[in-house]
Length: 354
Ligand code: ASN
Ligand code: ZN
Image (cartoon, rainbow, N blue to C red):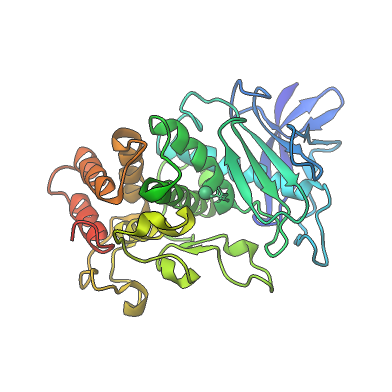
């Protein structure tokens, strides 16, 4: 077998080049260039064919041109059955995520030793979610029902980032209470950074920085349908989802982790973009300073990553995260740097340490 490059007609990213494997009988959806060891020896994509357990079957193809680029809505006019399009979207999303972590942040894959993962698609029927599982070291995607098929780049990046968090923080970041909100927020932050990296051409160019324009600050906007016509989450103003708070309060740990993530997402948005380039109704809370400068995606992502990998523990709270991010900004950019100041401002803006 040998590493080759195929063509993929994706649902969410257009026609792209993907890394595949040439075998004696055809081609395999196996990335010979990313991941070693693990269950399959490299990152691969498998077809669950609507089952809810098992490793699934690795996708194969006769001509190394994959998918049909159709706009799949399970239960809608176009269903994805067990087709390749979902598989190549997932594959592409993890290629971009893997490279963003490696090229920008210097992390060797999910666990920093390059251990391969696998991606299972067509989980169950009309399943409206995707998830990471520590025990299989794998990611799983449903075909959607209210949502389109779940394999957008930001969602793939979100799921793989759960694996990063689980291996980067000793013992993992406990998935309940405030630490659970920070765990979810970490996945939304890196899922969004992957989207900016990808849309800025980072995968093809091997860029070592993350651009600050070209992506967006919502999660799952590509999955919208007429029955669910909004993104899953709004990082710049979490309360737009109707359930997430914009700022920390002492009871935030009682919320579902996908809502207690809101202030963490908003803090990162402020850290990157500052608080002056959104309309006042979109950023204002009584804690928000009149306006302050952001440091851009690249520096914000490095600060966040250093805080996560160097200072977080399994029980980190919002107040402890603030200290972690201040220390990370000092380590990377110096005490008194604009980056350190932006961390103070961005946490104050979510009512932490204000
Ligand atoms: N898609 C969800 C997530 O990754 C699944 C879950 O609730 N854990 O957060
Ligand atoms: Zn998550």
